[in-house]
Each structure stands twice: as structure tokens, then as C-alpha cells.
Length: 492
Image 1 (tube, rainbow, N blue to C red):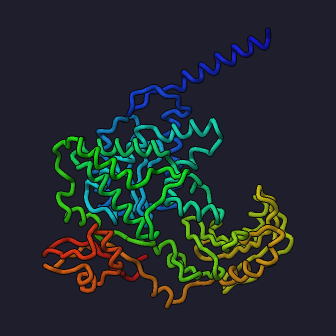
Image 2 (image 1 turned 45 degrees about the vertical axis):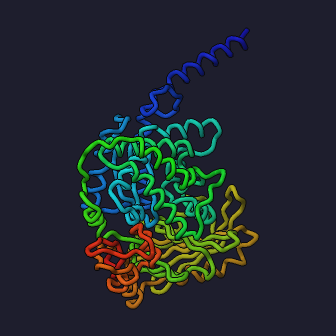
Image 3 (image 1 turned 180 degrees about the vertical axis):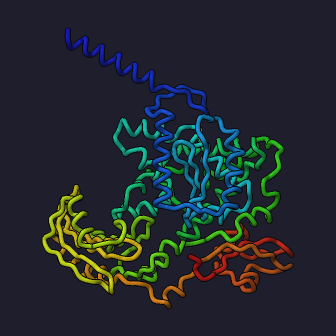
């Protein structure tokens, strides 16, 4: 009797929870079970947005931001979901990427802007990301993940901000920080639905929905340029094949009616001018690698990482690992500068570490403290080689780690890297450059090769073709705007 009553109560409770979790999807108009409220989405999105700003960084060009936001806000006003405040940002990523966080945070990367060739392309991409927010895809993913324990939604949504599968793979191999994620942020059907929403929003707000197909083709060309082959989908690939998306977008665009509205940038030339002086390629502000030597101009430091190791320069830390992936080296800031011995003591207290050996001294003029310790992790017992260095810009910590059985074979490598920490030389500082996008006018009958030679273009012919969506043998017309990359001394 008690068992029957308990079962009935449990069934009633489950039914009540299901009813309370039901909501109407703004895009489809259908009822669906979601275990995340709109308020929870906003809270989660705000947390994730802070991590994006800290780990990836944002572009703060006021004119460029105003332009991107003008496109985004026009489209957001037509979004089927209006209970969120849409916010648009440019992420400081050299790769072409775009992603959306719960609560209406939408990002396009500067790398995506660099290969865009029309306002319609950019509008369709932004519309696609609005589609993810409007259809509550993050809430759907969290609801499904809750049942099978895949991962938290914060890791899921930030997976889309990690720079793609290659970045995620590298990061996971190097023991990367939280936020990169091991699976992509949305499923294939969600990506297809967002393509459709984005194209419809574009047409509603005055842009050619064919821009979606055009940009998909650009993205396919970029993949071929970077990897040397067309992207082959895998079972765990969240995005449908680029070619499939382009073909579907082309067919859909022919069926949509464009609402007559003026473009924000009225011509391709005007669109290109919005991108003028955009930083392209790596951002030296986060440090640059010369082989395995890290040069960081803003922090005035240099440090050598082990020869032959793979490196990953993230916003929060610089990581390195050997091919065997049985060790890792990490450089990061622990806080404000001060006494390295005190910093080490506090770190040991916070992490319940006992130093088996330690000592203080100097490394190339900086006060330092080194220690050896062991730590128990889910992967087993790790040996740690820890170095704290008091630099004017803050307290740096260099951590070398390896399984205890392999630690001794790496201990000297860890020590040599930590001991290489120093200030930049004047020659090193002067050698650091950055690339910016420049818009130049072609001469009648000029080739891309001839234009590149005349203007000092630092892109290869293939990169120039891609950025401008032009064939290699194109004959340029007088005054035709062409995007090139110029190289200048680094501007802190």
C-alpha cells in the first residue's frame, strides 16, 4: 500500500515537473519540455559572456562595433523571440567564427569579418546566430544533456567559442582550461534550423538571403586553404557539411521575398571601408611565438618552451606539451606582483600541496621561488615543478606537470624553461609586427599578383583570392576595391 502510494506521488510529481517545464518555442510555436527558464538562460549567458571576454577577448573598435550592431539590431527587431536583449560583439579571434550564448549574446570574429565580402553575407551569419537564441537551442541542449549527463551547458555553449574542432582537440590534448569544450555547441538539426531562421530574417529585413550560401562557399574555401582538403564530416560533427548547407541555402533563397530596405553600407566599397584597418591574423598583444620562444610585448617578457613541443597561446595561459602528451608546461599570472615565497605558500595552502623540496633565488633579475610537489588528480598522481616569478606586471607561475613515473625525465626540461623567463630585448621588441586589413583600388587590367607587388600586400595569392572571393586569374577593373594585408610595427 505504501509502495503504491509512493509510486502515485512520484508519478504526480514527475507529471507536475513536466507540465511546469513545458513552454512554447518562439520559432516553431510548438510546446516543448525545457528544464531551463528564460531567466536561467540570461544568468548563464552573462556568466559565459564574462568568460568569453576574459579567455578570448573583444575588439573595441567603436565604428566597427556600431556597424555590426546596426545590422544585428535591425534583425533582432524581427526575431520571433523578443524576451531577451540581443547584444552583438566582435570576438578577438583570427579564425572565421560566430557563436551565440544563451540570453542573446551574439559574437562574430574579426577573422569572419575579414573574409566576408558583402553586408548580406554578414547579415545572414548574424541572423543564423539570432536563430540559435530565438529557438532556445542552448536550453534544448541542456535539457537533453541533463538526462544523459553529457556536460554542463556552460561548457556546451562555450564550445562554440573555442575556435572549432581543431582548437578543441589541441586544447583537450594540452589539458586546456574550462570553456573550450569537447563537443560542439549545437546539433546538426539545430544548425539547419538556424540557417533557415537566419535567411528568413535577412529577407525580412532587406538583405539577400543568398548571402548565406555565398558565405558557406567562402567558409568551404577557407577550410580547403587552411587544411588542404575539403572538410569531411564525422559522426560527432555538429555542423552539417558546408556544401550541403550551401546547396540548401541556395534553394531556400530562391523562394524568399526580400523586403525592400536600404543597406546600412550601400555598396561593396562602403562595406569594405567598414573593415578598413581591421587586425588580421594573430594579435601580438597576447604574445607571439618565434618557434618555441614566446615574446610578449605588452608584458615585457620572453620565455623559451621546450624544443619540439606543441604550444597553445590562450588568453588565460600559455600551454605546451610534447607529442606523446604525457607532460604539460603552463605559464600564467597568479595575481599582483609581490613576494614569490608568499605567493607559493598561499598557492600550496589553497591546493593542499606539500612541497617535497623548495628554494628561493633570482631568475634573470627577478625574485623567484621554485618547488617540487605531488598532486592527486582523476588521472592519477602527478609530479609538479612550480616556479613563481615576481615581475612588475604581476606574479607569474610556471607549472610543469607529468605522471610521477615520468616526472624525473621531464624535471630538467621544466626547470630550463622556467629559468629562461626574462625581459624582452630591444631588438625583439622592435621585431614584433602586426597585420591590418587595408582597402586599395585596383588599376585597369591589373592582376592580383601585380596589385600585391605594387601595394606591399603581405597575404599570399591564395589568401588574397579567398579574402576577396576572386579567381586567381581575375583581371581587375579600374577602381575595384581589393582587400589586402599590410604589415606594420606592433602598436601597443
